[in-house]
Image (cartoon, rainbow, N blue to C red; front, side):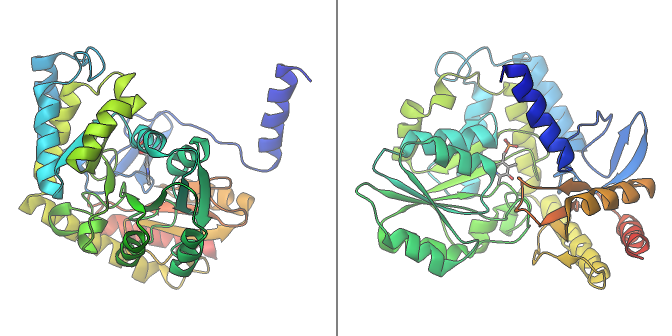
Length: 385
Ligand SMILES: *Cc1c(COP(=O)(O)O)cnc(C)c1O
């Protein structure tokens, strides 16, 4: 078999299983509306949970940042790419989240890869929730050391995996709010067990940071824990892009020496750091509280209206509200039918989720109006008949 045959075969395989992934170019993708050449839909597919991607203050901060610093950072942070804008943002993040240190990364994917591969040695065990995001599981798979998955949000399973032990050190990995299910991890219990066994705890709160908790501090603050490593991302509730790792001074020093994604990669543009700073100021303000309360009202509205539907709702109190359909083709057909009714949701199929659990990933935002939620519910009820 040559390369061409191998690639053709892989594509045909995807196609026949109804698993072909498709992109569509949009003119607006974040916020209330999804717009493209072919039409305009109510957008229930984005991660712009607070509607900050179009906030005038965030846009203005990015523009002013570009005027002041130029468009690119000019290099890795270890060379010339670390600006005053980056430093200001890191200090504000650390103070807001209650950690000695914050380090910026270009994406959550890079942050997770960097942290896990910088820490894990050959004798270590990485004990991760089996539904953890691909960026966490892939990093744990590629890193030296052993990946052990525990059953989703199952404390007994976590204990069993940790009690197997290893000749090195152990790290527990989980998410605050799970990206494909929208449910929350039992963080207080997980933190207690990690502490008892001397394991380091990493929590990826990509979907909680900004969206939940006092001043938007996220899932960990809400459950009163402070993991050794907290990863937050800025492409979701912050409405921008990028990520930060919050940790102790010593761990921060270690990552600056050993996290390859910080050393061999161009730092985020300073203007982007300015935009994230503006988003953080909103997240922690009264306006942030108002936006989070709006989001909660939309979530409750949706769940009350969707409860009578035939499809199973995930036990989620977050902005992520998946409807579990099961079959790949039926999930695609439902998403197509909704699009004809002016509603955009994303069908999620294996291997992103377990086989037989294909779903519509519906995401809600403070940018939605009650009328938007009613329209979504009416479309779903019409399609279920
Ligand atoms: C989105 C997401 C990431 C990746 O973050 P990016 O900044 O988009 O690369 C990592 N972890 C979780 C749980 C996510 O949902």
